[in-house]
Length: 387
Image (cartoon, rainbow, N blue to C red):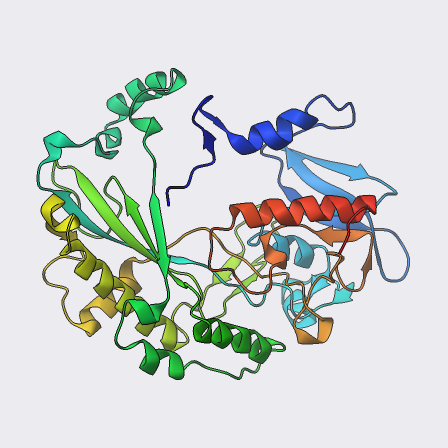
Protein backbone atom coordinates (compact mmCIF):
# COMPACT_ATOMS: atom_id res chain seq x y z
CA UNK A 1 0.00 0.00 0.00
CA UNK A 2 1.09 3.57 -0.63
CA UNK A 3 0.07 6.00 2.09
CA UNK A 4 -0.37 9.75 1.93
CA UNK A 5 -2.15 12.48 3.86
CA UNK A 6 -1.87 14.83 0.88
CA UNK A 7 -4.85 15.35 -1.41
CA UNK A 8 -3.37 14.88 -4.93
CA UNK A 9 -5.98 17.26 -6.37
CA UNK A 10 -4.99 20.22 -4.20
CA UNK A 11 -1.52 19.27 -2.90
CA UNK A 12 -2.78 20.18 0.56
CA UNK A 13 -2.67 18.12 3.71
CA UNK A 14 -6.01 16.35 4.04
CA UNK A 15 -6.20 16.99 7.77
CA UNK A 16 -5.98 20.76 7.42
CA UNK A 17 -9.01 20.63 5.12
CA UNK A 18 -10.98 18.19 7.24
CA UNK A 19 -10.37 19.77 10.63
CA UNK A 20 -8.76 23.16 10.92
CA UNK A 21 -10.28 24.88 7.89
CA UNK A 22 -13.77 23.77 8.89
CA UNK A 23 -13.30 25.27 12.34
CA UNK A 24 -11.32 28.29 11.25
CA UNK A 25 -14.26 30.69 11.15
CA UNK A 26 -15.31 30.09 14.75
CA UNK A 27 -15.16 33.24 16.85
CA UNK A 28 -14.07 31.25 19.92
CA UNK A 29 -11.06 29.64 18.21
CA UNK A 30 -7.58 31.14 18.19
CA UNK A 31 -4.60 29.08 17.06
CA UNK A 32 -1.12 29.96 18.32
CA UNK A 33 1.88 28.14 16.87
CA UNK A 34 5.16 27.77 18.76
CA UNK A 35 3.34 28.26 22.05
CA UNK A 36 4.52 25.43 24.34
CA UNK A 37 2.59 24.59 27.49
CA UNK A 38 4.70 25.11 30.62
CA UNK A 39 2.42 23.72 33.32
CA UNK A 40 -1.17 23.27 34.41
CA UNK A 41 -2.32 25.54 37.24
CA UNK A 42 -4.34 24.29 40.18
CA UNK A 43 -6.95 26.20 42.15
CA UNK A 44 -6.16 26.87 45.83
CA UNK A 45 -7.29 24.26 48.32
CA UNK A 46 -6.99 20.54 48.74
CA UNK A 47 -6.55 18.24 45.75
CA UNK A 48 -5.82 19.28 42.19
CA UNK A 49 -8.53 21.23 40.37
CA UNK A 50 -7.22 22.58 37.09
CA UNK A 51 -7.73 26.32 36.94
CA UNK A 52 -5.61 27.44 34.02
CA UNK A 53 -2.68 26.90 31.70
CA UNK A 54 0.69 28.61 31.66
CA UNK A 55 2.41 28.81 28.26
CA UNK A 56 5.06 30.70 26.32
CA UNK A 57 4.43 32.72 23.19
CA UNK A 58 6.87 34.97 21.39
CA UNK A 59 9.23 34.79 24.35
CA UNK A 60 6.63 35.92 26.88
CA UNK A 61 4.98 33.79 29.57
CA UNK A 62 1.17 33.87 29.45
CA UNK A 63 -1.54 32.48 31.71
CA UNK A 64 -5.03 31.55 30.65
CA UNK A 65 -7.46 31.04 33.52
CA UNK A 66 -10.82 29.39 33.10
CA UNK A 67 -13.56 27.75 35.12
CA UNK A 68 -14.22 25.07 32.48
CA UNK A 69 -12.20 21.89 32.22
CA UNK A 70 -8.82 21.77 30.52
CA UNK A 71 -7.68 19.23 27.96
CA UNK A 72 -4.11 19.37 26.76
CA UNK A 73 -2.35 17.78 23.80
CA UNK A 74 1.44 18.19 24.17
CA UNK A 75 2.15 14.62 22.87
CA UNK A 76 3.69 11.55 24.47
CA UNK A 77 7.12 13.07 25.06
CA UNK A 78 5.98 16.36 26.60
CA UNK A 79 2.81 15.27 28.41
CA UNK A 80 4.58 13.56 31.34
CA UNK A 81 6.95 16.52 31.67
CA UNK A 82 4.06 18.99 31.85
CA UNK A 83 2.23 16.86 34.42
CA UNK A 84 5.33 16.50 36.59
CA UNK A 85 6.12 20.22 36.46
CA UNK A 86 2.50 20.75 37.56
CA UNK A 87 3.00 18.55 40.62
CA UNK A 88 1.44 15.35 39.19
CA UNK A 89 3.64 12.27 39.13
CA UNK A 90 5.85 9.96 41.15
CA UNK A 91 6.64 11.65 44.47
CA UNK A 92 10.22 10.33 44.37
CA UNK A 93 10.86 12.02 41.03
CA UNK A 94 9.11 15.23 42.05
CA UNK A 95 11.08 15.41 45.31
CA UNK A 96 14.33 15.14 43.34
CA UNK A 97 13.25 18.14 41.26
CA UNK A 98 12.08 20.10 44.29
CA UNK A 99 8.45 20.09 43.14
CA UNK A 100 5.60 19.83 45.63
CA UNK A 101 3.54 16.71 45.00
CA UNK A 102 -0.11 17.57 44.43
CA UNK A 103 -1.12 14.16 43.03
CA UNK A 104 1.04 11.08 43.64
CA UNK A 105 0.72 9.25 40.33
CA UNK A 106 3.75 6.96 39.85
CA UNK A 107 2.78 5.82 36.33
CA UNK A 108 3.37 9.27 34.79
CA UNK A 109 6.20 8.95 32.26
CA UNK A 110 6.35 5.17 32.50
CA UNK A 111 5.46 2.50 29.90
CA UNK A 112 7.03 4.47 27.02
CA UNK A 113 6.97 2.60 23.71
CA UNK A 114 8.10 3.47 20.22
CA UNK A 115 8.46 2.10 16.71
CA UNK A 116 12.09 1.57 15.67
CA UNK A 117 13.36 2.23 12.16
CA UNK A 118 16.40 0.97 10.24
CA UNK A 119 17.11 1.43 6.55
CA UNK A 120 19.00 -0.87 4.19
CA UNK A 121 20.04 1.38 1.29
CA UNK A 122 20.80 0.25 -2.27
CA UNK A 123 22.03 2.10 -5.32
CA UNK A 124 19.88 1.81 -8.43
CA UNK A 125 21.57 0.00 -11.31
CA UNK A 126 20.16 2.34 -13.94
CA UNK A 127 19.58 5.65 -12.18
CA UNK A 128 18.82 7.55 -15.36
CA UNK A 129 15.57 5.59 -15.76
CA UNK A 130 14.00 6.57 -12.44
CA UNK A 131 12.92 9.58 -10.42
CA UNK A 132 13.96 9.49 -6.77
CA UNK A 133 14.15 12.05 -3.99
CA UNK A 134 17.96 11.97 -3.94
CA UNK A 135 18.43 15.19 -5.98
CA UNK A 136 16.55 17.09 -3.25
CA UNK A 137 19.59 16.80 -0.98
CA UNK A 138 20.96 19.69 -3.07
CA UNK A 139 19.39 22.86 -1.56
CA UNK A 140 19.22 24.60 -4.94
CA UNK A 141 17.36 21.66 -6.49
CA UNK A 142 15.04 21.45 -3.49
CA UNK A 143 14.18 25.14 -3.83
CA UNK A 144 13.39 24.67 -7.52
CA UNK A 145 11.11 21.73 -6.84
CA UNK A 146 9.31 23.56 -4.04
CA UNK A 147 8.18 26.04 -6.68
CA UNK A 148 7.06 23.17 -8.92
CA UNK A 149 5.17 21.59 -6.03
CA UNK A 150 2.83 24.56 -5.81
CA UNK A 151 1.79 23.71 -9.38
CA UNK A 152 1.39 20.02 -8.55
CA UNK A 153 4.63 19.04 -10.30
CA UNK A 154 8.17 18.05 -9.40
CA UNK A 155 9.84 15.55 -7.12
CA UNK A 156 7.91 16.62 -4.02
CA UNK A 157 4.82 15.00 -5.54
CA UNK A 158 6.44 11.55 -5.45
CA UNK A 159 4.91 9.06 -3.06
CA UNK A 160 7.21 8.97 -0.05
CA UNK A 161 6.71 5.38 0.97
CA UNK A 162 5.31 2.03 0.01
CA UNK A 163 4.38 -0.08 3.02
CA UNK A 164 3.84 -3.78 3.65
CA UNK A 165 3.39 -5.70 6.88
CA UNK A 166 3.79 -9.33 7.85
CA UNK A 167 3.93 -11.64 10.87
CA UNK A 168 7.42 -12.78 11.83
CA UNK A 169 6.46 -16.38 11.09
CA UNK A 170 6.02 -15.57 7.41
CA UNK A 171 9.52 -14.14 6.99
CA UNK A 172 11.75 -16.11 9.38
CA UNK A 173 12.31 -19.79 10.16
CA UNK A 174 13.43 -18.70 13.64
CA UNK A 175 10.11 -17.07 14.53
CA UNK A 176 8.76 -19.87 16.72
CA UNK A 177 11.95 -20.05 18.77
CA UNK A 178 12.08 -16.26 19.21
CA UNK A 179 8.41 -15.76 20.04
CA UNK A 180 8.23 -18.72 22.41
CA UNK A 181 10.80 -16.96 24.61
CA UNK A 182 8.73 -13.77 24.91
CA UNK A 183 8.65 -12.34 28.44
CA UNK A 184 5.30 -12.87 30.15
CA UNK A 185 5.65 -11.30 33.58
CA UNK A 186 6.91 -7.95 34.77
CA UNK A 187 7.46 -5.93 37.91
CA UNK A 188 5.66 -2.81 36.71
CA UNK A 189 1.92 -2.65 37.40
CA UNK A 190 -0.10 -3.92 34.44
CA UNK A 191 2.94 -5.05 32.43
CA UNK A 192 2.09 -8.75 32.62
CA UNK A 193 -1.36 -8.06 31.16
CA UNK A 194 0.17 -6.04 28.33
CA UNK A 195 2.61 -8.80 27.48
CA UNK A 196 -0.20 -11.31 27.50
CA UNK A 197 -1.91 -9.21 24.83
CA UNK A 198 1.28 -9.08 22.78
CA UNK A 199 1.73 -12.85 22.92
CA UNK A 200 -1.89 -13.28 21.87
CA UNK A 201 -1.11 -11.21 18.76
CA UNK A 202 1.66 -13.68 17.88
CA UNK A 203 -0.73 -16.59 18.10
CA UNK A 204 -3.33 -14.98 15.86
CA UNK A 205 -0.71 -14.16 13.22
CA UNK A 206 -0.79 -10.38 13.59
CA UNK A 207 1.44 -8.48 11.16
CA UNK A 208 3.92 -6.93 13.57
CA UNK A 209 6.86 -6.58 11.14
CA UNK A 210 6.71 -3.59 8.79
CA UNK A 211 8.69 -2.95 5.61
CA UNK A 212 8.91 0.46 3.97
CA UNK A 213 10.36 1.33 0.57
CA UNK A 214 11.63 4.88 0.15
CA UNK A 215 12.73 6.22 -3.27
CA UNK A 216 15.81 7.86 -1.80
CA UNK A 217 18.72 7.38 0.56
CA UNK A 218 17.72 6.85 4.20
CA UNK A 219 20.35 4.83 6.02
CA UNK A 220 23.48 5.00 8.18
CA UNK A 221 26.44 5.22 8.60
CA UNK A 222 27.95 5.10 5.07
CA UNK A 223 27.15 8.21 2.98
CA UNK A 224 25.72 8.06 -0.54
CA UNK A 225 28.02 8.35 -3.53
CA UNK A 226 27.73 11.71 -5.35
CA UNK A 227 25.15 11.57 -8.13
CA UNK A 228 23.86 8.11 -7.22
CA UNK A 229 20.16 7.31 -6.90
CA UNK A 230 18.82 4.94 -4.29
CA UNK A 231 16.01 2.84 -2.94
CA UNK A 232 16.04 2.30 0.81
CA UNK A 233 14.23 -0.80 1.98
CA UNK A 234 13.54 -0.05 5.61
CA UNK A 235 12.09 -2.14 8.38
CA UNK A 236 10.19 -1.12 11.50
CA UNK A 237 9.94 -2.96 14.81
CA UNK A 238 6.31 -2.30 15.62
CA UNK A 239 5.54 -4.23 18.82
CA UNK A 240 8.49 -3.89 21.20
CA UNK A 241 8.41 -5.68 24.54
CA UNK A 242 10.87 -3.20 26.08
CA UNK A 243 9.47 -0.27 28.03
CA UNK A 244 11.10 3.13 28.46
CA UNK A 245 10.64 6.21 30.64
CA UNK A 246 10.24 9.94 30.02
CA UNK A 247 10.51 12.40 32.91
CA UNK A 248 11.16 16.07 33.53
CA UNK A 249 14.90 16.59 33.90
CA UNK A 250 14.79 20.05 35.48
CA UNK A 251 12.45 22.84 36.51
CA UNK A 252 12.89 24.44 33.09
CA UNK A 253 9.77 23.57 31.08
CA UNK A 254 11.50 24.49 27.82
CA UNK A 255 14.36 22.07 28.44
CA UNK A 256 14.01 18.60 26.90
CA UNK A 257 12.76 15.89 29.24
CA UNK A 258 14.98 12.97 30.13
CA UNK A 259 14.21 10.11 27.73
CA UNK A 260 15.43 6.57 28.37
CA UNK A 261 13.82 4.35 25.72
CA UNK A 262 15.35 1.10 27.06
CA UNK A 263 15.66 -0.17 23.48
CA UNK A 264 16.45 -3.91 23.34
CA UNK A 265 16.19 -4.26 27.12
CA UNK A 266 14.08 -7.30 26.30
CA UNK A 267 16.16 -9.47 24.00
CA UNK A 268 13.17 -10.59 21.95
CA UNK A 269 13.17 -7.11 20.38
CA UNK A 270 16.78 -7.42 19.23
CA UNK A 271 16.35 -10.96 17.91
CA UNK A 272 13.17 -10.04 16.05
CA UNK A 273 14.78 -7.00 14.46
CA UNK A 274 17.77 -9.03 13.24
CA UNK A 275 15.38 -11.36 11.40
CA UNK A 276 13.60 -8.43 9.80
CA UNK A 277 16.88 -7.00 8.47
CA UNK A 278 17.84 -10.41 7.10
CA UNK A 279 14.50 -10.59 5.30
CA UNK A 280 15.08 -7.16 3.73
CA UNK A 281 18.33 -8.43 2.27
CA UNK A 282 16.59 -11.54 0.97
CA UNK A 283 13.92 -9.33 -0.57
CA UNK A 284 16.55 -7.26 -2.36
CA UNK A 285 17.82 -10.41 -4.06
CA UNK A 286 14.33 -11.33 -5.26
CA UNK A 287 12.75 -10.09 -8.48
CA UNK A 288 11.82 -7.43 -9.40
CA UNK A 289 14.15 -5.84 -6.85
CA UNK A 290 17.11 -7.95 -7.95
CA UNK A 291 17.09 -6.38 -11.43
CA UNK A 292 16.74 -2.85 -10.07
CA UNK A 293 19.02 -2.72 -7.04
CA UNK A 294 22.79 -2.57 -7.18
CA UNK A 295 25.38 -2.02 -4.47
CA UNK A 296 24.22 -2.24 -0.87
CA UNK A 297 25.45 0.95 0.80
CA UNK A 298 24.20 0.20 4.33
CA UNK A 299 24.71 -1.84 6.40
CA UNK A 300 27.27 -2.85 3.73
CA UNK A 301 29.18 -6.04 2.88
CA UNK A 302 31.15 -6.07 6.15
CA UNK A 303 27.94 -6.60 8.15
CA UNK A 304 27.01 -10.25 7.71
CA UNK A 305 26.57 -12.25 10.92
CA UNK A 306 23.72 -11.87 13.38
CA UNK A 307 26.20 -10.26 15.77
CA UNK A 308 27.23 -7.77 13.06
CA UNK A 309 23.59 -6.87 12.33
CA UNK A 310 22.87 -6.53 16.05
CA UNK A 311 25.76 -4.10 16.51
CA UNK A 312 24.72 -2.09 13.42
CA UNK A 313 21.16 -1.80 14.73
CA UNK A 314 22.30 -0.69 18.17
CA UNK A 315 24.44 2.04 16.63
CA UNK A 316 22.24 3.30 13.82
CA UNK A 317 18.55 2.55 14.30
CA UNK A 318 16.31 5.59 14.65
CA UNK A 319 12.90 6.37 16.06
CA UNK A 320 9.82 6.64 13.84
CA UNK A 321 8.60 9.43 16.15
CA UNK A 322 5.60 7.36 17.22
CA UNK A 323 6.36 7.55 20.95
CA UNK A 324 3.32 6.46 22.95
CA UNK A 325 1.88 5.27 26.24
CA UNK A 326 3.54 7.56 28.80
CA UNK A 327 0.14 8.56 30.26
CA UNK A 328 -1.63 5.28 29.68
CA UNK A 329 -5.39 4.79 29.82
CA UNK A 330 -5.44 1.91 32.29
CA UNK A 331 -6.81 1.24 35.77
CA UNK A 332 -4.82 3.30 38.24
CA UNK A 333 -3.50 0.20 39.99
CA UNK A 334 -2.38 -1.25 36.63
CA UNK A 335 -0.14 1.64 35.65
CA UNK A 336 -2.82 4.05 34.51
CA UNK A 337 -2.59 7.84 34.34
CA UNK A 338 -5.97 8.60 32.75
CA UNK A 339 -9.36 6.91 33.02
CA UNK A 340 -11.56 5.80 30.07
CA UNK A 341 -12.77 9.39 29.70
CA UNK A 342 -9.18 10.68 29.53
CA UNK A 343 -9.37 12.34 32.97
CA UNK A 344 -6.11 12.38 34.91
CA UNK A 345 -6.49 10.32 38.06
CA UNK A 346 -6.63 12.36 41.25
CA UNK A 347 -7.52 15.61 39.48
CA UNK A 348 -10.61 17.55 38.54
CA UNK A 349 -11.11 19.27 35.20
CA UNK A 350 -7.97 17.88 33.54
CA UNK A 351 -7.69 15.46 30.61
CA UNK A 352 -4.83 14.32 28.38
CA UNK A 353 -5.61 13.87 24.68
CA UNK A 354 -2.68 12.54 22.65
CA UNK A 355 -0.86 9.30 21.84
CA UNK A 356 0.44 9.07 25.39
CA UNK A 357 -2.92 7.65 26.54
CA UNK A 358 -2.71 4.56 24.28
CA UNK A 359 -1.48 1.84 26.66
CA UNK A 360 -0.09 -0.58 24.05
CA UNK A 361 1.51 0.83 20.93
CA UNK A 362 -0.36 -0.38 17.84
CA UNK A 363 1.34 -2.20 14.99
CA UNK A 364 0.32 0.63 12.68
CA UNK A 365 1.11 4.22 11.84
CA UNK A 366 -0.22 6.40 14.60
CA UNK A 367 -1.49 9.55 12.87
CA UNK A 368 -5.03 8.28 12.32
CA UNK A 369 -5.11 6.90 15.86
CA UNK A 370 -4.38 10.34 17.28
CA UNK A 371 -7.19 11.77 15.15
CA UNK A 372 -9.56 9.12 16.49
CA UNK A 373 -8.57 9.82 20.11
CA UNK A 374 -9.08 13.55 19.55
CA UNK A 375 -12.48 13.06 17.90
CA UNK A 376 -13.67 10.82 20.72
CA UNK A 377 -12.30 13.27 23.29
CA UNK A 378 -14.35 16.03 21.68
CA UNK A 379 -17.47 13.88 21.94
CA UNK A 380 -16.68 12.96 25.55
CA UNK A 381 -16.26 16.61 26.51
CA UNK A 382 -19.49 17.55 24.70
CA UNK A 383 -21.28 14.64 26.37
CA UNK A 384 -22.20 13.03 23.05
CA UNK A 385 -19.77 10.09 22.99
CA UNK A 386 -21.48 6.72 22.56
CA UNK A 387 -19.68 3.59 23.73
